[in-house]
Length: 181
Image (spheres, rainbow, N blue to C red):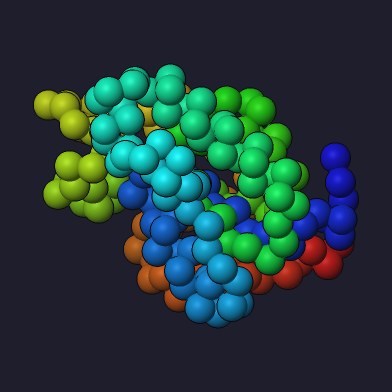
């Protein structure tokens, strides 16, 4: 494993759906001037259809394959000075977790189930939540993924009750310390 000083100077955001990855990525980009790469957008481009359709037509496993391929391609491009926002389940495959850590400073945006429900309740574009028991699905997935997020991230940031600028400031301070080591 590379030392922090040898790690590409990318900021990678992981966390559950609705944790604010895309919004925080935009805030970080405004502050740092780094471009944002959203892995879900790359997958949509590659597949030629929305994520919801990939899940409906091809299944979750095919989506996870596309996600893994996208991460490998991203790593092979040897990026630097990017803000990378990932999908909520990217940590489901161990190889993905290793790639994320090699890509840069990984920040887990921690969010409560209650906050996830508030943030996602109106969206029909979240295939894993298109069911009658959204709360049960959220609780189950959070339980399954919590340790994977923790093991992958260099830093965890609790987001409930914080503004995007507050979260961004915390991430930037942690990243400066990480890369200075």
